[in-house]
Length: 499
Image (cartoon, rainbow, N blue to C red; front, side):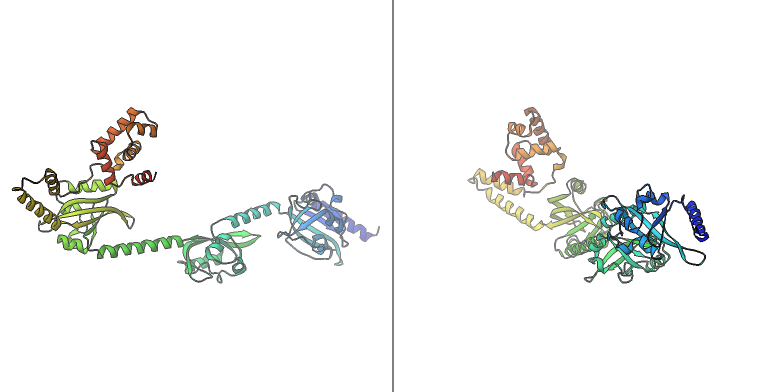
């Protein structure tokens, strides 16, 4: 053996001893693609126990192992790392998936491969080296991130900080903006401007340049079809494939903007209707009954100015006649939320009184609960009714021949059918008592109710007695009238008539 060959073999043995214990895999290749040595780490990364299991050369290696790029494209013969390094190609960070050629569906190992060409003292290639790092766990983490990123419904894009171009976009962003993937990938953050009209754009650009976290801020994204979309945008730096990147995530504020616009328009319509309606109307807060607003018709009817009313409570103004009438009215509103019609007397400024019918409901203004009181002046109508009754009574003094039925009708007319505050609310009844009342309104007897609700007859009778007591009625017919006046169980009655 010549001294040169001996020296080379000696150097090679020393090199093998040095690298045999490294965690990275190392393979020594001849220029003819012969595999002359591999350390234990390289064997483990290929899932084999002996160098012979790798194959004697590049051809046998390709017969035993199928290599694919991460995009699932198989490597051509000349692209295999053994072929490249044997041809003198020096490369770094080639990432490939390695699987047995006879079972390519088996779980792949991921290798990160780089090459070295060792030269002798004369500068001629002496040994070709492949250095392999196991990137399986890294690739698995990348794959999990990729799946999570794509499946996440929250809109997001990732840009590379070196050139500020987008390298990833998820479906959420595409659906939110209407962009196609091709319109985003490869474009810069200024072409698809994710910081358009950002409230702190200068800070965002500074943080982007530094690769630092971009705090949440409001911005508007331009849409490919025209128009903009209001969003909250934030940026988080991350590392992808050993490249510094920025993850932009978004919250779509468009539904909130539309809701706020709709609310504003609704309140504007309410305000216009409130001002223009000829019916006297007042709005007060639900908690303190403090006057929030009144319309011109209310001021004209009661003779007050807005300054005399707004900010004061209804109790302080004391324009509703009757001891405790105002308190009772608001108690009913607190329980039932509305009053359909109630005869009240109102005191004008100057102590003149008016007969009115009051209707009230609960409304929300600027997220505050309020009561809307609507009044109808019936003073003239009541005066006419009383005058008519008085005239008939005068005639009746000399008309003993009038029938008793007519006399009763005139007596009823004199009472003027005044509406009264309900003495009880439907909500005062328990769920079971409501069921019993509903079946009473259907015309069922106690036995039938007991059968329908699967209750004992005495239990039903006790429920009926409790309902009478709470509603202050004394018979089935009065209970039915009470319910009908409040439009309760109307759907049940219609369904029963259809049957």
